[in-house]
Image 1 (spheres, rainbow, N blue to C red):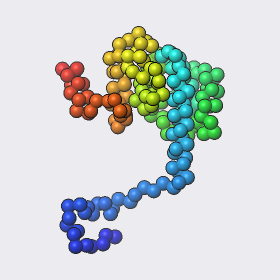
Image 2: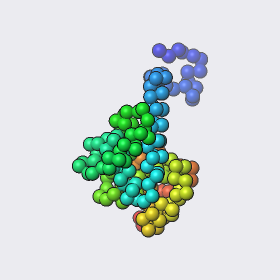
Image 3: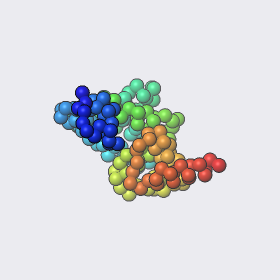
Image 4: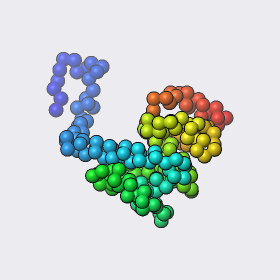
Length: 187
């Protein structure tokens, strides 16, 4: 119930604010979310050990097999890589990590070859945790793994950013500039 005050008509007072109940998470829930988030970061660190797009594709299939096996749709996975990933995750239930990050994994999986899966996984890591890529933290360096141009890889990065609006990193252009560039390419 709102308390009436003298300045109820002020431009900063909004009755809708009182109607919205804040979502309160317990410390246990926050700790659990942090644990799952840290486990996904460890999985990304593990994935960056790939030396080629195909190796990254195999690492993605292992991530999916461990975290969200229903996304594989009978695609093969490497059991050795799966065991390495489970060890990298630590004491966190892989299915909980997969349930939190299934949309990202599904986006990376939505293609036809291991090489394309690897490219999408590199794009995801490039946007989410570019710091993990160390010497390969540019579009040109990652694209060179496939003998492609930086623009070709940037197209995949742009697709990831457009699919998951809100993900940004420090070196991205502003939204207006990105929109102008995209419109110029389409015209």
